[in-house]
Length: 627
Image (cartoon, rainbow, N blue to C red):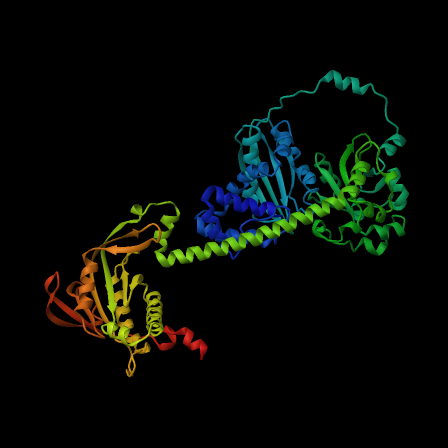
């Protein structure tokens, strides 16, 4: 699958849902590349892998998404310079649809490994027509509907209704029939005088016809080849008398190779390929070995076969001659360079003079080296761009990670979207806050050097960070020896008091893993813990170094609970004690005179039933790795 389709997928999400939605989808799908080179081939599974994540993330159905993606394709095609091709493919919508199958033939020069769908029209009426769609890929029906609606609206200024009247899978090919309803009255009537004038022209002899079309093949209703052109006679004279469906396979359109089926597709360009390598046919002067007739090689995926140049490809129009009841395949060899021309046993003089076959072949040979260098340069630039985008993504991830450490994700998303600091402020009616400090911190600072103090604080706060994640607590700040955490803000929860007490008990128990650095003290550090529940206001403070801060009486009271607590105990207000479930063991301390609050009845939280304290390995993972 070419990158043009993948870029169509990405571009539609960016246009409708935003850049951030696309980043989310590709990261969920583990796709590092944010952009795709339109001429590069990517794995077929890439779209389905992205689509599964897109539908869940964006909250849309597959049909809705693919139809919108198909509609956006027409806009994307215009950006890449294909708009003129679409605009000039047909004078009216019916002309466009009749020539739709041929469109992909033109694109094969830019996309040589294209596995294009096939289309043909029938049952035309003044009110619409039936369009038949064939594809090796599944799941693109709605995508095609979106493309057809976009073409009708963009280039023909009309709205069309499209219904799926039949859909089935035959072998590995999807067959879908669309009923298109639109004003299909023909605007131009052929001049009858001109038709009568053409009727008076002299008949063309068969010898002249076979000279004008050196690669013509004439076959009858029984599919037996009756005549061939001058150039084919030079290389494969024994082809005459063979059956077309045994000698050739149809690459395009995707149909069964039968006489009646060919007649129904007269508006399509046909591409046939020999069932045997051309070198083998040249040795036998075009005759098939009898053993090979019953063992025809499967060519369904020939367009992606790296050895396709070993076979002779013929491309042209199937023209039915009613008087003779035969079909004339007016074709030319599909040859990309002089090397392939030589392998086919042909010379430049064998090609038609009245078309551009010779000019295109010689020009392509002269320009192939320059084109190859240009393509190699484009691939190299694309590779460098992808590497740069990957580095940019990595830096963006680091920036997001750093920002999430400074403020909650919900708040950082607002900041990134352009919200001011005032817009980030919120009132939280009920949260629970935990404060802690080290009572002997001043003495530790007096008796220890700076590195010992930093090591102690790093160990303690590192443990508290792990406990915050474990208990889903947001760390508001750390100042000196003080840790401040909150539950209920910025994400509102009902059991905020219970979570904070789980955190407090874990903190109390885990400081046993932090040794007291003072000389002669063979013990761990001891902390005081205090908590209170109430209303706070949360928001971003500062521009140069913004921080997420909480303000309110609940913060002051929590700090007071810590200050009037005792080492290795959890001191809480009556509000917190009233919010805790019965699993906690709470002991009333009595009345305590609290500075700025007066007398308060406070409590000790001693334990919780069935609680398992964190192990040393859980809170000090780096220490476990070193061992």
